[in-house]
Image 1 (cartoon, rainbow, N blue to C red):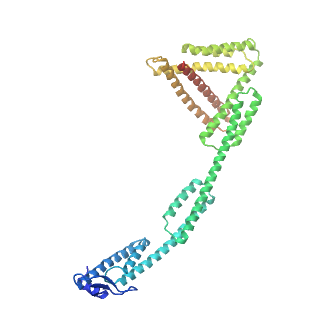
Image 2: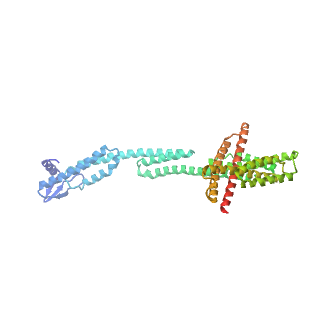
Image 3: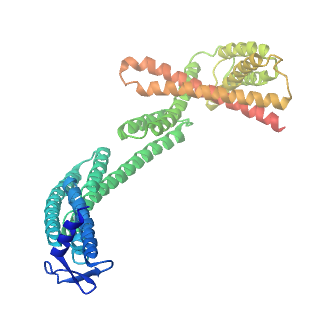
Length: 437
């Protein structure tokens, strides 16, 4: 605080006493005005109001220093204007005119800075708009979306522009963004529609194949299925990997089922054209039906006997002459399923014995049936996993003639797993029936 003598001199320079009132002399465009009343003495009152001026000047000095040091000078504009307004109303005695002038200069400097910043902000926002508009022809939707995300952040961080330009710039930027995302949405909708069309085309071919897989018109059906295979290639559509694999598995299964039957049919025809080793077609059918009946009854025998007898029956089957017509396929399916059940049941019982040291028949019959059903389900899961590997390998195989033998081998293994899975499901059904009885 300055010495009272100096403050008194400054107070008398800018103010005076009239009666019991303290007055500030006219300054700038402001007339003389009362700032207070005499309390202890005239001089003490003058010094008091001079000290108040020093407090006000300290506020101004502090603000001017902050403006000078700050990079964001615009944030101090309202504070400078507020202090300028106080010049005409603050109760004190001092050189308000010089403070007013300094605040005015600071205000003008801030406005110049704001104007320059707004010009820079305008250029920045126009550049951001141009960058968004440049994405109008892109089809790299992921990169475009990331770019717009970055541009939006840049837009938010960019300071204001002149008020009369704000709304138009905001509208331009948003229009450019909306245009990009509208195109992206349209593209994705079209892509989804295309995927759906491809999916339906494949499903149609699958349904046609499944409708033909049990046909007995072997020659015409072979021609139709080969055409369906070509139609499948011609679609050449792109689908999600799992969806594509599932569709291909169904399509191939129908064709494999038919061509497996075709092989049996051709072999039957070939044998029919050879001299019958023994008996007529009816005799052969009766003998094969007898072998089927015995094979189907093997599950009631001890497994060691059943397995040995199943192998004997398979050898006997080969010695029986051919059977004509559709009954040949039917009786063969019955026989091979019955034998497969014996071999699968033998493997199942071996598995149970290894995991039940106290004996495979420990526990109630319901518990034993449940245990075997669960084991069979586990086996099916493993079979399907191995089959999927084979299917995947087959799908990766190109169509060159050199791969034909390997392709045939893979297809045979896949069909073998189909039989294994079907047989295990039959056994599960048998154990479930026992649980229900």
